[in-house]
Length: 59
Image (tube, rainbow, N blue to C red; front, side, top):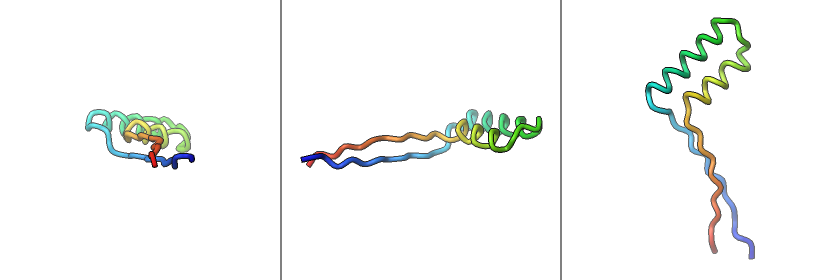
């Protein structure tokens, strides 16, 4: 019998200094005419704490 698998994705804001660094970095990149397709996702990865966990449940 195979145990069922699940995925948990937790997204939350990082601490304030790290969030300010991400916001400032994204703003600076946009101000320097970097493409938004690069600047915005990079800033979000800095600002947000994203954790992906694989859950295995025993039956």
